[in-house]
Length: 147
Image (cartoon, rainbow, N blue to C red; front, side, top):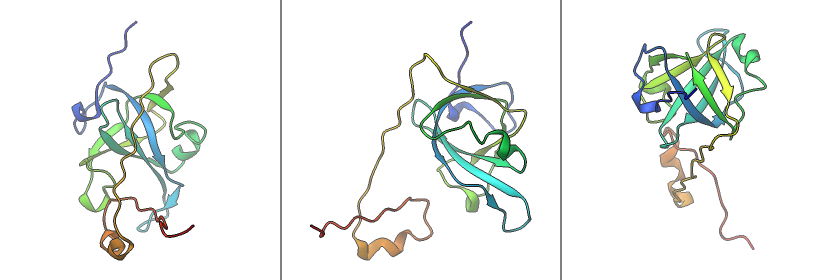
């Protein structure tokens, strides 16, 4: 049976009945919310065209996906809840996020072509590092002057 797979950009808020093949780009450690005692865990996912979306797992569902959704692995994901996200919570350039819970179907991709998302780097002088404090950029420091 051939699986109908969509792209991240084709999914709208509140949409159901879809399946997407993604690669896990990032999986943060679980955190406690600033506004409540609830735990959450954020992930960044990408499809085969490089479209990205953030996903969040809450509370007891974090334990369910502890040994799955591994960085660099490919998965088919279906039935995640899709909703709009406020700009202050965005970690990728997408105004939607997925909530992954116990009803979300997650299957590791096996025997299929894998998604490989190339890393993109942009270098800036250390003296301009402060301009990235509140940005969505991920910053690493490299000392080019060391021997």
